[in-house]
Image (tube, rainbow, N blue to C red; front, side):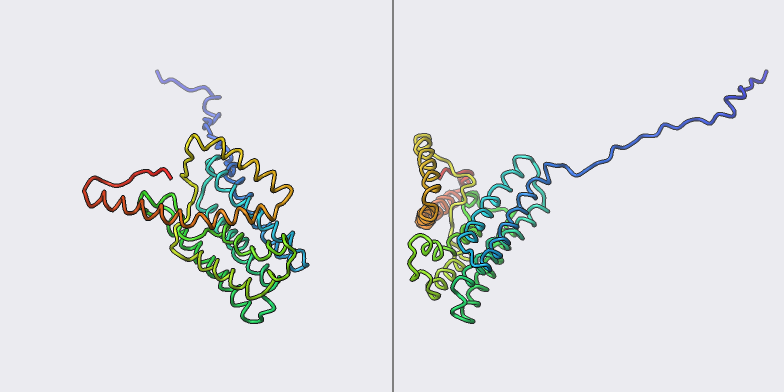
Length: 279
């Protein structure tokens, strides 16, 4: 006997199960670090506008605000697990504008224009050295560096260089003496800072810097004192920080040479290499 399907079964098509894929958006945690980077870029560009309007104290302050944002974006990206190649490239472009172009233009508008073409050449030299320094830094990302080298930068990083480049301006703000506005003095400082950026001088990076336990509490007290001083004497505080930073160069060079020599001795003896350091 032949079984016949019901009329409803013949006329009704079989329904296929459709899998609805959820719409994937861009994760917010990957946007926040890039937003902070853009804020740093805006601060650097704003400093140029302020300098064009002869508001030099506000222009210098805008560069330091950009440096604060620049110090936060990378840490926020690692905290939120939002690091990306796009963010790294955006950070380099922002650094070049905020710490390469802006400080050079600030010093040029402030005093280097009195030297005519020489002042402009020095300003261009600073910007070019900043671009070369950032390019060298990007090329070293992911490179197989010696273990002892991870706690050091090669040359002065761009944010620190921007602060050092504006030292003549800060000295004039603090003392009121127009002698610091001399074009040749500012040109010499700017050229020296440009040379430090592309130099091979090892400077502390603070990435894996470890503080002995007995120094933790005094360090907190020192940071609190510096913060209190910054609210009353901001330019003097910046100068003190700059002196401390430049004064650390001999110690960073000595530490780097000592660690490199120890690593070479270990390698020559066949006992391995230094895999971690405590500075």
